[in-house]
Picture 1 (cartoon, rainbow, N blue to C red):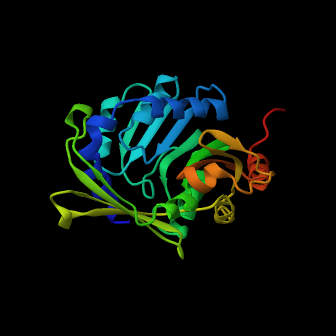
Picture 2: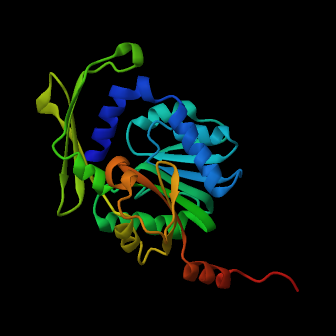
Length: 270
């Protein structure tokens, strides 16, 4: 995972003028948190917070937010910091944070590293950061759509008026054996300096297997903002098969984990 800081710092520099502000996407995420968890306010931990604009949108709604970002995008996130938003420039595999968050979010980033890395992160969420009864909201990369994008190329001309100062190219590919996407970018006139992100994709069934032993379980799934019936028949489900490159998984502590937590709490009273 050594590529992570350079990739997100470089692309962060390319796109910050266009993407670092709080916009419709960030406010939609904050609204979805309210739909899923209730109005709050909550103590929220956002992992892989990027420019901090989703964290800022959550803070706008009255939540107390801690945003963790490993790359230089954290410098942009600091511009959103305030009484309800704390930014931590660190690696969420190593950072030490207080626990007891009502909500833990990880938008548009889960899957970096190995399955063991994902389980290590999920165990941290479950055991260290998420309070009993809380919600973890995690965007999961969808292999069906990433596989459809294998071999795609895209060229993007600079558009300074919209905040895109760099002319860049992108190449996308997919490993069907290990269910990993590769997403390579370079400045058009500097192809030898290409940078690549690599991520693991999980079908919902794969995700449920990954969660075994983490004390977390899938409670709800959303594709393009629409909830899936976990017990339903989804044969031919077009958004998941053809359109959405990621889906949102809502995770909660397993019943056994919650029961153990209740038993371990001291009894007050007499």
